Length: 313
Image 1: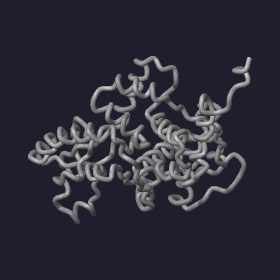
Image 2: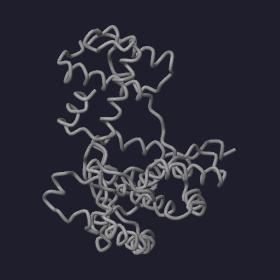
Image 3: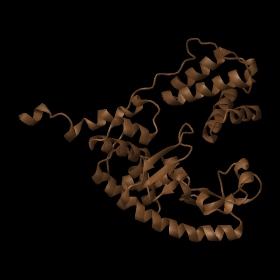
Image 4: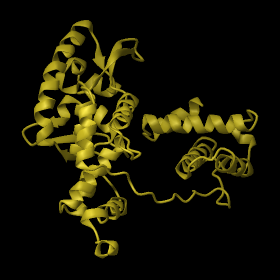
């Protein structure tokens, strides 16, 4: 497993991808009575993937993630690529329409959220941010003059810029002023932020005490870094997700809404307001335009779409 991690880091995989691959490779080994993967053939891989779908009922995307992990294991660690055979192919993912909230529902959810979760939700809706992108925003990424937020190292390790809503500017300034008090205390106690590479720290020795590199939404607790120093991570995404789920339940909204529904709502409402689909693609950071086109199926239904013939009765 140490070789797996080393190979993943050589290819600049994200931490989440590395952890996912390690999880599936370990699960594959345990499913085969702890036998070494070098002693297992493509038949074992096929049976493992089949068991995930039939016995465990995992989603197609989960099965594809397991396949990607095992493909990486055999191709880059064992240097014995898996052959292209039946049963070892990506599962077809069903197309699902995104859950989109109305402006009234978003206002109700915001009223049910406490600080700083309300501000996080406003940024996710107002800027189209993923929950992990919102939690990991640093002070330097916010540009009040140009009214934009820089998303650094988003999904696929891609950078992009997205608008900062005028309604978020004043609450965000107030939040940062309060955040600076905690930052001053952290500097005095020698507590730096997480997520800074060793190369970056060597290049800028004072970066850990630099206000610009602090998280906008820090965690309440500190952690011990690899070098033994105490550091402060950003607010964990699961904390925001639990708060959002509780707010949806409190408002009585019958939709299966999550934090990602705010990003879906951002794109759909822009499309309904007349924004160009290519512009929305750039703001969301989609590589393929077909990914963004899914919102046209949501925007063209309901009051802004076709008129139902039942309305003529």
